[in-house]
Each structure stands twice: as structure tokens, then as C-alpha cells.
Image (tube, rainbow, N blue to C red; front, top):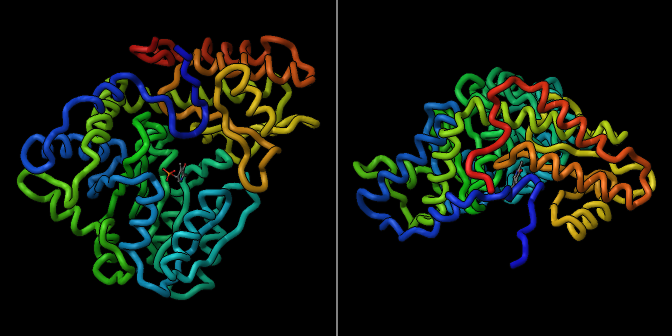
Length: 395
Ligand SMILES: *Cc1c(COP(=O)(O)O)cnc(C)c1O
């Protein structure tokens, strides 16, 4: 049997066997008590991770469907929204809003920059009647984690809704839905939770529910009100046939998450991220992006002079079966990315760094063998004891 490839890209992330096995169990019929319990457990688990008492809805769609649902439910054609674009996913959010006829005010950044709350404040002050700010928490294409708490304050002062794409941050990076006053936050199953792709989640504040009453954008499958009404039945349901198997997998993924403990999971992400960054620096490579201390989900690395990032990624996959992510957009060929969100432990990081060393050496880059691995081990050795950087149940 061929050995499966190891994904170290920022989603989808490797799915543990418990989750796959749960997805292979018999279907739970979606009308009636069995499914009600499943829906309730997954929703309640997500609320804990979102750190919110707001409603959380779940859709059978990839993350982008959740983003689209936010635009469809919150705004009317012609409404003005501000979209900071500092990478591939910022651009996607702007294009979704444009597709629905929003008057989109982009704030363009060089990729790798963080969104500056003061820029959002400036555009808000110049633009009358802004209904929403649509922004990434973690911009996966650059690895940058934005300060959406500060952006949320600016939005609130101006009476605009803050709609956050938390698809690659939720569960991997500190996030406080209620304390930060986030109106809408969209997550996905295939990133930090290491469930299979196909579910999106949306948390919705009271102010966001109010906005839906006025919002005239067309919607049917993603109409939030239909979902809320079915969730409020004595035995919660979905308005349409849910992705039952994916929900069984998601429940298993959340049970695993809570067994490890939310704090411990975040701490593991912090340490693994630091180990990747120290390892790469020890090879003399430069990291890309602002606020690297917050970039716990994905690390963007500049390809060294004379080496094409896309070729490096292709060679690591071909020779070692490890899938890194290439640079996107203007960073194509110039950077490559290592995803470390989700079901990873320290030996995944060490294996990845070892593969990187071997590959770079073969491509003619001068390095000292073992230096990246040694630097990562240094980070693990210095981490507080008892830290679960080795996951239970790993083969
Ligand atoms: C992965 C990702 C998405 C897209 O999600 P899909 O599930 O591919 O639709 C959107 N935004 C961010 C920040 C992501 O990381």
C-alpha cells in the first residue's frame, strides 16, 4: 500500500482516524431526537471555541459558503462595505460582496502586511453609511493574523458590523467572540479542527440578527432565519438535509479537541509555530509577514535567492511525500508556506524541517545539516513541561 502523503498546508489538515471512523458509521436520521442531540452537541462545542453566547449556525458548504451567507443575510444591494485586502482571501471576500451588488471600498495592502485599524477608521470617517467591515482574522495566503479586536472597536464606534473570516484562526489562534464584540464570524471544518472539508459555521450577534431584518440581498439555501427556526424546535433540526456524516465526524473532532483542552490546543499551536519559525531561521531563510508572534496557523517563508518556491514545494512533495503550500498571487514562486494548524505534533514539524533541509541542500542551497531540526528541538526543550506537543493516538 502506498504511504499517504502528509499535508502540511493550511487546510485541509490531516484527519485523525477517529474522525474518519465516525464518518463511516450509520447515518443518524435527520428528523427527530438522534440528530437533535448531534446538532446540539456540535453547536454547543463550537460556541465554546468561538467564546460566544451568540447563535452559531452550521452549513453544508466549504468556508466560502459561510462567507457568502454573511453577505447575503446582512446587506442590501448598494450597501457600502469596507474590505481590507491584504492577501488572497481578502480579495475573495471583496469579490463575494461585489457579486451581491455591494458598494465595496477596498483598502489595498501589500501582501504580508497586517490590516491597520487606523486605516479602517480613516475610510469609515470619509465614507457615509458604511454597513459592514469584512476582514480576515488569519489571512492564510500570507500567514498574517490581524488585530480584529481593534478593528472591531473601530467598527462599533461607527455603527458598522464587523464580519470576520476566522476560517484558519478559529481553534488555532486566540479568539474571543463576545469579549471582542465580533458580530459575525465564519469558520470551517477542515482547518484547526482537522475534520474533513464540507462544513462552515457562522456566529451571529444580536446586532447582526437585527440587520437581517432590513437586508434585501437574495438568499434561500443560506437564509439564516430558516436555520434558526429549525434549531429552535424542541429537537433541533436543519431546514434541509444536513451533511449527516460530516456532522458525525465534526462531533468526533470536537470531542478530541475538548479532550486535549482548548487552552492546551492553543498552546500547542503557539509552540509548533515557534519551532517552525526558529527552524527556518536557523537555515538562514527569511520569514515573510508582519506580527509573526501572532502567526500560529501558517508560516510564510521567502524562497532563497536563486530557488523557485514552487519548485521547492513540488520537490518536497515528490521526494518526501510532504505537501507544503506555494505562494499565491504576487508571492507566487517567491514564498512557500508551512501550515501548522490542526492535528500536528512536534514530530510532524521535525519531519517537515528535515525534508526541507534535504531538499534545499539538493537544490544547491548551502546549509548545515540538522540545524533546522536542532533549533526546533530547542524550542520544544524550552517549552513548559507537560505540554501536549505529542498528540494522543498518533501512529
Ligand atoms: C481556507 C480559507 C477560506 C476558504 O475556505 P474554503 O473552505 O476553501 O471555501 C477562506 N478564508 C480563509 C482565511 C481560509 O483560510
